[in-house]
Image (cartoon, rainbow over all chains, first blue to last red; front, side, top):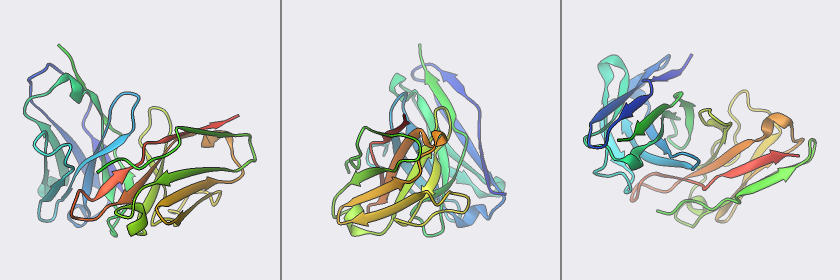
Length: 119
Length: 112
């Protein structure tokens, strides 16, 4: 059974750093793109970026380029999303999702990680 | 890269059909047969309902169908049921020169 399990909710202060994770199981982790999606409170879905764990090829949406870093450790089948200096506007639910082999749809999703940034 | 345009809300009575539109451009929806649709219930992760414009993943009821004409894709829910009340998002491939994918603005489906 394909599963993506994300790390737990986080409460941080502005300016702090953070790294959240997404562990894949039940499939060949290195053979599928993984994407990160942001959903701000009461708002829609936004693609942040994608990574191919097989070779760490990473692409960022222009809105998130330079704002976050996406990485993966294929030895432990885990993808990461990290911030070096959080802002209050980073408060959101963050989902990871596996992209189908054709690369055009996200067929499995993590449960989401709620990040709250508040002073 | 702008979000695809969806109606804010649609509604229907149980058993009726509703259709959600998703309008983009020739650079995304109109340019590729790679439109997908996601259902999201409150507090839950999105769920893939349609991919490649009109294909249904295993386990998705055949009440859900997708189509595309020009720069507009559509999701139709036939025989509306109470559990179909949710937010729905379209998504299109947009080529590798920009970022690959773009979501729609989202549509709230209400079952009256």
